Length: 408
Image (cartoon, rainbow, N blue to C red):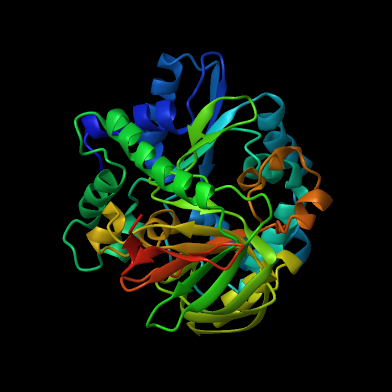
């Protein structure tokens, strides 16, 4: 686990740069029960920064697994009113929240995918107000990770002390191994902003991905799209960083202008199950066919969640020389693995990646080509030989990535 100094640096970075906690503001922390010390340090730091109140919501995957295996169908899809009220309370009271993503990639191995999906769909519908607020920056949030035993064992199965090894990798990925992590993060954000500015100035209509693995995909961009990087701005005007680590520059694809084939570059851990070596074919924006060597049923369930999960909601560019990519570690955790590779997302697009998107109705967003869904699931397609080309409205082509990295 982190040293005392690293844990304090972690808490300060997450609260000051991540959610950018303001004096007098409430904070919710979502934390695995086995990492109570992390929640304690975050809570102590938050109060020292002037938080009005800190609430902790505990998670336990073993209990959740028992729920999936034993609950009746009616209970699986039941979303209590108190749960809906608790989530909506965060929006109404202008809380920010920190979510610690440290799932065991095999936590729900053997649980029928349709059970997990039914429960997720029910929650997505019942908590729509909350999820819409998160996707449109109605509240400030930050997803981070700390090592847990089960997760570390999956990443380093033969190590004598896998948690210690995973701790070191997380420290490097989050730039916690520097003397002044906040200063280093400011420099990192400025570099990502430079890439975003280039892409916004170029105003490409399409992005084309191609590699030797078999990806040959053209992705149209939504009308009025804007490329974003690490720093975002919430509706209250305060900036924040939603993911730590983050290496991406991202925007909204056009829901009806995606054509070609993509091949996964890394395994996808989704709902505690692994999907690997999968292929998806798109035609006029919609998934036409798909296959997977591992986790086909889970992939099928995901794609058929609703109409929106048959289309794309995000396109993100990450160079192969990011700290996570250079580590060569497969984390089995999307927060990390998506930052090792260019990626796409099935499902809902972020309204914030459209000019004035937070002020547009759902119908207006759809007219611009923005996809909607109750899901948003990232998966990785970037490889060391990937070429990414921007195509302008007049047909001019500009190479953005060559051999898996930025050239602009």
